[in-house]
Length: 466
Image (cartoon, rainbow, N blue to C red; front, side, top):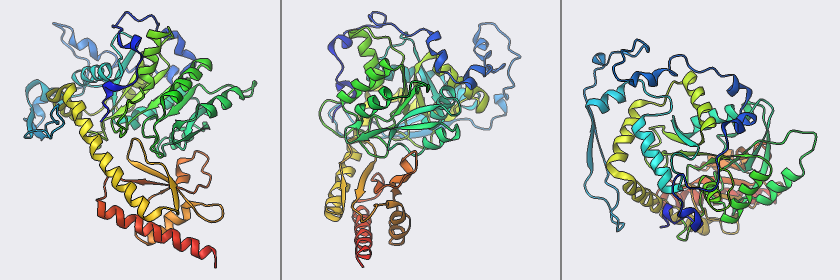
């Protein structure tokens, strides 16, 4: 299993130390044209902007309306978690018992910082340094949110005005389409295929953009395990996309919840977040065009609702300003649980855990692929996903080949449910594609589900000839 340490980062970037890079960071003023009118007009929270001052030694604070912790009925929280696999890749030992008491419990039960609990933020900053080579003091910062969806929605509001054009990898994660739609954004579809987002498509769009029309300022992409396609962008594609971002003054929203679910065994391409730092070291390009979104949902717990955003400080501050007026902060208790577990594991233990999770899903992918070959060979076309939790396949249907009616009626009536491709296309056009998740079902259930889908496709094809 390829580890995050095996990404293909140039040697000159590997040798750099914090503060010695030849590249520069963009100044804060660079981001003014990228921020929406809402973000520019948002006033700081009169209470939350002063909360850090409460840490001043000797200060008696009458500031915040925090409830008195003596009224909280909770005296401790205890939980157990699996130990991560050993360095040799063997299963972990006995479960680790952990608890929140004393100061940890007090922090878990009380209001906390807008951008996340300090202990968790510090651990995640070091994770980004370990995995992506981004050291503190390089013009970026990190903030925790209530899942990456929460952070995505706030970033979109911070970066786009109503009616703005936005470049969107297509097909695209269905959950982001309504976020752009709610702002009446013009979603410009950038083609993607088995090698990820198409740099040729992106270049064609940008170079052919009407001179009288403002160009898009933002590109949204899912580089690993692109939802729904499962495709991972190649290194060549990433380099070209990053270069186009420089040429056309774009910000890249790098939505990467499947980064740690990578199934190929060879060296892996670095994130855009890592690549722009490497380019700063090797070519002197300024850093600060990438806003990266990570999530623990696929690797620790979906219900804890913890995601984190890393990127230029002015953009992250704009997201935090939204949080301060919307939901104040991510939940302290789930942050404290995550921080306690991650501190016990350490970064090496965490990465060994993600390798184990990735191996688990790779096996499930292979089971699904084998069942696809048994039941849908000749009836569908697909490329096995390199990352993520989904198969994206085209049903070979008669006529226009719209999968929506088949998936929502005929397949459902036969006892199998998936998502039609149309829901992943910003303009909602018809599509013969289907997205199927392979994360939950057993091998027997997968076989039966695809057998039912095969019966459905055969029935539809037979009906079209009568």
